[in-house]
Image (cartoon, rainbow over all chains, first blue to last red; front, side):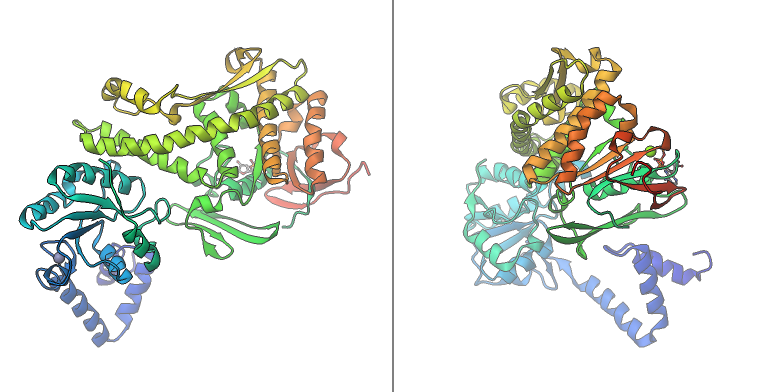
Length: 202
Length: 346
Ligand SMILES: Nc1ncnc2c1ncn2[C@@H]1O[C@H](COP(=O)(O)OP(=O)(O)OP(=O)(O)O)[C@@H](O)[C@H]1O
Ligand SMILES: [Mg+2]
Ligand SMILES: [Zn+2]
C-alpha cells in the first residue's frame, strides 16, 4: 500500500470502515470510483451527503425518517394503543412488510449485553417510559426482540421494568428458531408470531 | 486424494506430515485440532490461512470446504456457506486416538466435559446450540458480576437464561451416562491386563436444584465475581477399583483408560448411527503391548466389516505387524503422500 497516492489510500481507509466491507473490497471499490466518470462519482457523493443530512431518527419512536415525527407516528390511522418494541430501525421494515401490524413502534437501539458493555441505560428505555406518560392511550407493549440470549434477557428486563406502569406486556410467539433475528424471518412467520403473541411473566 | 473404505496405514519417519494428514480429517469433522492447537497455529508458517476440503461419500456425496485466516473464515457445504455450526456438526463423525488423550485422565475437568460435549454434539442435533446458548448466558452473567454494582434485573434476566439452558445441558449429560459408561467399562476390560473395575461417574456441580444452589452461592459470587455453580463446573469422575484414576492409576492404567474412553466413543457413535465413525489413530498402537493391541483389534475389524475407514500413522519401526492383512499402505515423506511399497506380508 506504500505506493498508493494519498487521496486513494484515504478513500480506501474510509471505505473499509463500512460494515461488511473488508480491506480487499474497499480497495476494489476505491479503484473503481477513481476510474469512473466525474459525473457518476459526484452523483454518488451527493446521494451520500443528502441522505445522511436528511435522514434522522424519529424523535418519538427512533425510526429512520425525513420528517418529524415519522410517517408511522404521524399517521392517525395507526392504532395508538399498541407499541411494538424492536431492536433496530431496520426491524420496522421487516414487520411493515408482513403487513399485519397496525400499531406504532419503538426502537430500542440494541440489546442488553454486558459482555459488550451495553446496559439498560444505553438503550432507549427511558424514552419508552416517557411515551407511556405522555400518551395515555397506550395499552399494550409488544416486544419483538430476537430470541437469542441477549434478546430474551432484555425482554425479561423490559417486562419487569414496565410491569408497574399498568400496560400489558407481550412477546412475539416463538415461531422463530432459537437465536433467530427478525431480519431473517419471513413475512408469514412474522405474521403468525404477532398473532400468537403471549403475555410475558415478570 | 481418494481413500477407499478400509484400513489406511501412513508410514514415515518423524516430522514428515503424518499427523498433519489426520488432523485435516479431524478438522473437517469438528473444525478443531485434536492436538489442542489453535487455528492460527495450524496455518503453515509464512502463509495467511489454511484450507481443508473434501468430499464425504455416504448417502449421496457432500462437498465440504473450510478456510481459515485471521481475517476471514468460511465453511461451505455443497457450495453454500454454513450459517449455523449446529447444522454442520455430525456430518463427518470421527474419533481420534492420540497421545494427547492422556489428558482425559490427567487433565482438568474441562477436558472431560469437552469429551462428553463433543459426543453429544455429534449425536444430538440441538445440543451444540444449547451449549452455546448456555456459554453465552454464563459469559454475560460473569461480565455483569464483574461490574461494581451489577444491575439486579439485568442479572436476573441472564440468570433465567442460564438456568434454562444449563438445566437442559445437565439433563443431556446425565442421560448419556447410562449408555456410555457400560461401553467404556467393556472396552477397558478388553484391553486392560488385570481388569481393575472401572467406574464412570457424572458429578454435576448442581446437586439437586440449580436455582436454589445458585441463589445460595450469591455471596461467594459477589466476592469472586463469577458464576460458581452450573454445568460449566461439572466433572466426569473416572474410578479404578473405586479410587481416582488420575491420583492412583499407574501410567499404563491411565493410557489404557484413555483408549477405552475413545473406544466407547466410537462404539456409541456406531450404535447411534448404525455405521462406524472414521477412526484416526495417531501413534498410539506403537505404544501398546501385544495384549492391549489384541483388545483393540475388534474395533478395527468392525470398522472394516462395515466398510468404514481407519486412518493410522506409524513409523517404520513400530507398526503393528499383526494387522498386515488388507492394509492399504501409504508413504509420507516431507509433506507428500504416495502409495506405499507392496505389502511385504502378502
Ligand atoms: N504451522 C506450521 N507450519 C509449518 N510447519 C509446521 C507447522 N506445524 C508443524 N509443522 C511441521 O510439520 C512437520 C510435520 O508434522 P507432523 O506432526 O505431521 O509429523 P509426523 O509425520 O506426524 O511426525 P511424528 O512421527 O514425529 O509424529 C513437522 O516438521 C512440524 O514441525
Ligand atoms: Mg505425528
Ligand atoms: Zn416515529
